[in-house]
Length: 468
Image (cartoon, rainbow, N blue to C red; front, side, top):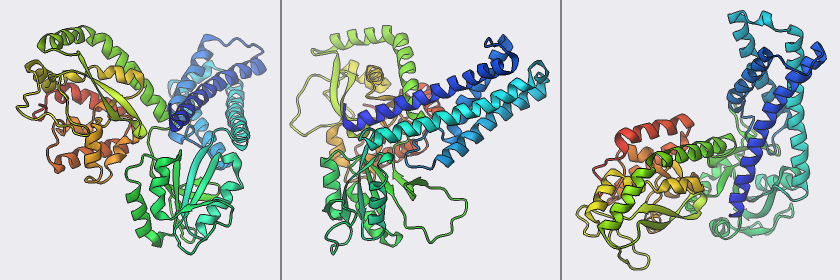
């Protein structure tokens, strides 16, 4: 697994553990309150049900307050405030339900009051202890993110200085790219790695997790040029605007080491989103494979009888963050060999496609083995379709933001496919439309959006006029 992949897996495990600790803390507080006020550790069944309801409310409400986002570098007071508000809302909904149904009289008010206080203490204490532990680990070189800073004298140097003074944040400054040719060295002691033209090459060669752009707003031409140079990279890009002289109303930005940080290009699959997506993929893929296994055996037999060669076709594709993987399909063409670096898309009347293969492609049944890719974790059920590496090389310079499709795992079906943009992309406009729909999906992802796409795929996503 890659360095960046390990970081994502670590964050996912930590996020899941924090969920579990919160739920366990709520139940533990209920038991402790019952012991303190009523003298027994054993909760009656009715009290246990109430505790379970609050855990369910917490599971639904806490993510809405970003309690499971990355709080790296953010103020502890902001996290305490968010936790307090989320806990208060969960209790308010419980009290409102109890008042409406007149069930509150069945429970001790003293127990509820002590539980509310103990629950808050447990939740806050857990987060403070987690922060202390993570700060210790980061200050000793663990749980690090490697970043480079792009900027000139002033803001860029100040960003580097503050990060170097805050090792507990876990952001390791690999170097500095200056935007001013007259700048010979960085005052905070960070090595100068080059100029703006050197950023993309360095990021591609080194293990860099984030690029921080610390340029004044008036340097928008340089920012635009840098984003263009990084268009082929899946690295996270963050912009630190010089907005300290502005009066902002109802506006929020991420704060790290005292600086406002605006995300320009980051994946939505972090924190609880990544956990939800992983559970959705694994559970649905396993269920679907159990249901379609007889059909897959029949298809495998049909492929074997239709022409000589293997049943499955494997091809290298780019996945999440540009990582290579092998996608699986039922073979729909006769076995053939193309020249190095050349790949011809299937077209209408393509002689390479077998009669049985043509049926599989029209109905998308050739894609069914990709559910094994989903179980392996290299694909999702819903996401941008993975293109051949040759096509990525062909279109990445022709379609703006083409490589941003790799900010999430590729999918078996997607928003572009159910809107008719599947099959052969024989014109540049077709590819532009597919990328447009893929980026819309990434920007608007939610569990409900995924379920909607899966449902629509059942009715309109299997058969397509462009699938040859």
